[in-house]
Length: 405
Image 1 (cartoon, helix red, strand yellow):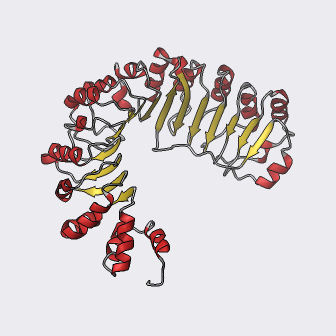
Image 2 (spheres, one colour):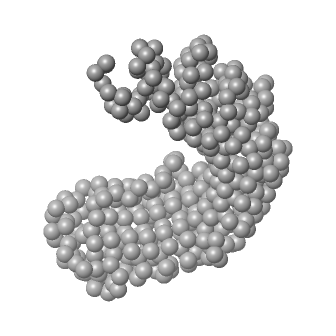
Image 3 (spheres, helix red, strand yellow):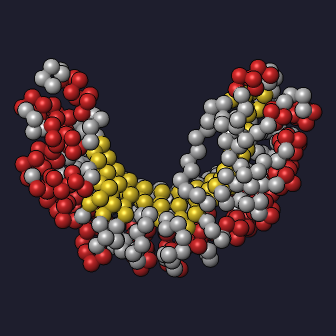
């Protein structure tokens, strides 16, 4: 170990968890100096429960560790913490900390005091992901917050919503419970008091009543994602009643289910640019109607579909989308006929196209070398590279709105 030079040590330390760094700092004076140097330059820190407990038992090491990175850290992750383990941190300041991901122990009796402690420790946060017993009280002290994630905070008191969302200038809010175990009641509409809000993630049953229309009227609101079981059809029809022309993108993850009501709603969103279905179902007639009625569609993603229309039905539908730039069939098992230029439906579509179409075929079971060899056509570009989408849950719908309309 003595033969490893300083630069190599510093590089090694970047990849070691904090518990290993605690061990190394006690080996000898040279290695200790490398670890302390590393601590003095950290931007991102993760401390697990065992790390917090170890620091709590070793005051000198806490002074060296927190004293080293508290002045530089920008992102802090605490997967399992408690107010008892964090109280001693009041001796330190965190002037550059802007992002905190924190999972606190269940502590309903002292939940509000716990939240207040966090606001005092880390007052300058702009991004917070908090899982705790918080009622929401004191959240408004984080005046600089832009992104707030309260997933699984089951004890939120909607009586605090007016103060929270009337004070904070959030751009993104996430409040997910993935089911009906929490009902925030009518006061959930107070979220719409946050006029800076751009993006919201929520369970579908909280969007009923007057809440969804109010959200769509916010001046900067551009994205709504909701976990859904029963209300997706109603919510899509509500969007159509109020702002159909503002919808520019729709993503269904295991949530379209060949629904006639949803398909009918989509037909009214004539400014739709992007449609994504993943691990879902759509029948041939629905796809044909959507492609025929949406002249501005630029991207169509049919990913890991449980059933896909036949090659003829697929290309007949695509033939109506004259502005389509991307057709993504990745992770859907396809036959070679789907990309056979001898297929009259495909050849007709390509002959009539005025702009090239990029066809994505990642993980479709097709042989890339054979497909690329046989598909030599100026109006068709083949890619076997994946397109990465943000799929954060099963059974959700994501709607993107154009702020310009």
